[in-house]
Length: 253
Ligand SMILES: Cc1cc2nc3c(=O)[nH]c(=O)nc-3n(C[C@H](O)[C@H](O)[C@H](O)COP(=O)(O)O)c2cc1C
Image (cartoon, rainbow, N blue to C red; front, top):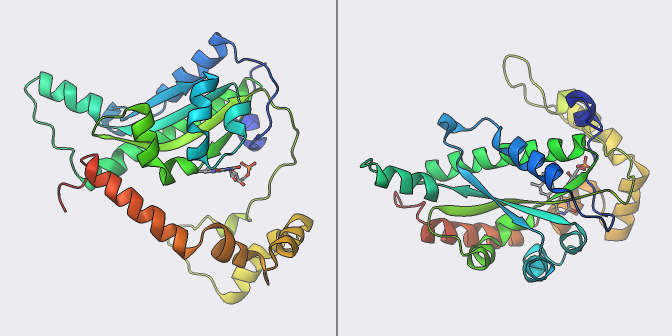
């Protein structure tokens, strides 16, 4: 079953439970080719995709993904890495001097990488599969670099667990359009607009339950005090900056 693009996009749900079924080679190839059809800076395709299907390799990377079980349950795990290595090698082999050892080049490659990853999500979903991103990749880039033996010029950016869905979650809420879209110029928000934009999300039963479980005053505090805290943001920022240096992307600093 191939779904049309808009239907696929509007029905998107992250899937974290998977049937114990393999993903057929043809289907996986479609996903990989769809990722590679994504637009990229100068058509340089500054990423690589590592396919993990072997259970031993999944077990090895599991702790780097904070033991999120979908790594084991998903038949296919794709790690998307920002990659200037291949491009640099090509340049060197053609008497062209690579000049991509800087922060801008990292961001450029990272943008190419996430666009390719999202194409993979849509290709998976349009073929009846489900997927979920794992944000742990960027936190644990150093460990993944060692495990995958990534040379300089490569930084892990995003991981997708992919397989046949074994759950049917509800669509997850989104902000109303004025929460994300501005016409012609940015218009900053008044307090009442912020209240309005977040009121639907804040009044969901699921949000109220989360607040109770986390013993916070409100939903925003779950983000600042529990999920994405200053302490963890600083820790992983420093880890990432070090890895950007050692992978050769900070030679301008
Ligand atoms: C970059 C990124 C990292 C994510 N990391 C995780 C993760 O580590 N674990 C997880 O269960 N979901 C993760 N997600 C999924 C989000 O929680 C999910 O997309 C969001 O709650 C909206 O739900 P939906 O995708 O079902 O619409 C991630 C999504 C993105 C885009």
